[in-house]
Length: 377
Image 1 (cartoon, one colour):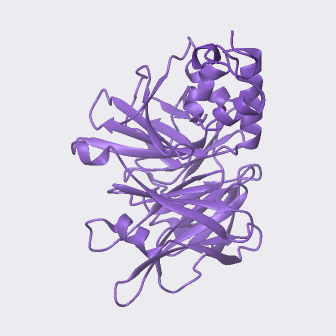
Image 2: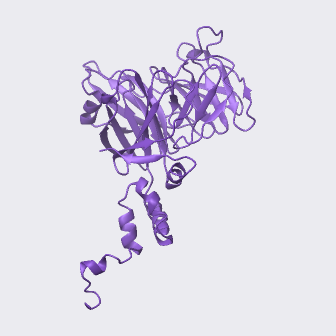
Image 3: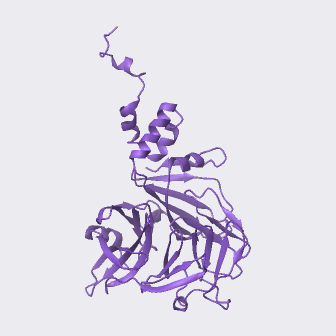
């Protein structure tokens, strides 16, 4: 028998891994692989918990690809920035009542004449199915603020009030009719012309082309504004989102020579003053442009401290910006969308972004939900 400390490789195979060595191993694993690690033993479960405390979670960028005709079959892929890998999410078929839509980072909804269905948990495991709003809408703004689901604008041409707002209370399960949207938004009240963001108290609605911003408080049923978020006269198109608790404005700048730049500003949510915090590197702007001669619009999905920037019509390349602290420091990279080049014109793409934790994955892979996750090659 070899002396202690001089084990052969075969003797070392059965040695337990624990302490700092275990945490070092677990810290290298993608989040999806930490789920089975939690049930190996109490020691491993504790190691996973310790690893997650020292490893800041990052939001997933989730792509929902849906057939444009009934029964609206949908596939789902997610990008995990921790591993920088795409994951296929295999899930049971749900009852798609109409086209899948999203106008807020982590909200999915479907609207038909007979039903309004929506989901806002991280992996969309829970769907709420309620009676539809009274006013028929084609492309509304939909956002969740606290217990309120706000549905605004985007009405059919057959309706008489293009600025109608309706609120569904998740607790009372009752629809109410607050004051309509500001008249300024009469010609741009649908989600295609506006960018929205929400915090715990308010809905922020900004017209993408002008940068004019209004806010809505569902507790007082009151609209406020306008404020103008136009830091540079060269900004031709802009979007908003929240990075942690900070409102971020992302602007597309085009000069007289058609040179394109993309900048980020942090916006004070009370005074609506702003200051520049970052600019996308020129090489990544070129990647975002792809084969197009010009970028005409951009969209963004944000959660945590990460922003995913893409072209809404052709998101072949997605640019990622990870923000650090208050000093404007950031890290940029790009990732190719593995789906858009392989799919037919009969499919549509919907993008969401959400913080995903081990608890969410445990629930998703449980027997009652039965999601399966597989890394794409």
